[in-house]
Image 1 (cartoon, rainbow, N blue to C red):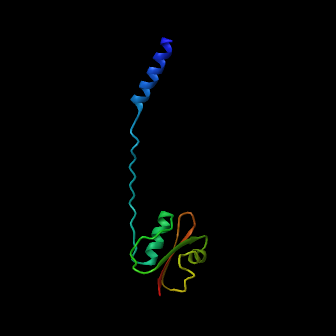
Image 2: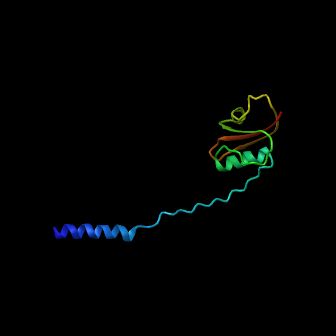
Length: 105
């Protein structure tokens, strides 16, 4: 019984001694050019994600697809009837295409 208590106590102390705080630091250094649709498309391709990065006061649609045309068609507001005034395409490292369209009413 004494050996069992001693074993449990030692195991408990080992866990306390080896417990490390789980703080993780993540830093990214992405440059973002959001002044044109092409800049947004390149940012999306470099990050491999579809998203909006500001820089446009009007409507903006972003999409992705396996071809440039599919990415264009998958953009937000693509069926809205608004006129596309700026468009940009970029291909990610995995081959996926990204598109950003900026619209005017």
